[in-house]
Image (cartoon, rainbow, N blue to C red):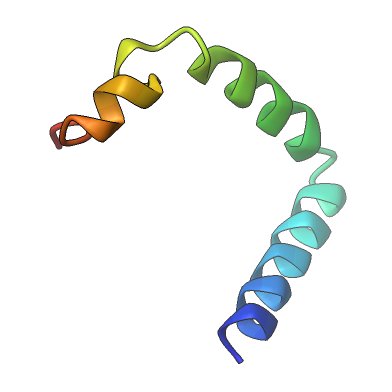
Amino acid sequence: MLEVELADAVIRIFDMAGGLKLDVAGAIVDKLIYNTTRHDHKPEVRAAGGKAY
């Protein structure tokens, strides 16, 4: 059931973003690309204990 609730949340977020004329899908792509350049997102850093919050 957790998957269903998460799917519902994503659908609602994208619906709201569409109504506001926001490009959430584009922002997600940009963020994923940006995260590939971050030191704390490298697999070896994550394996060594992850990033500090």
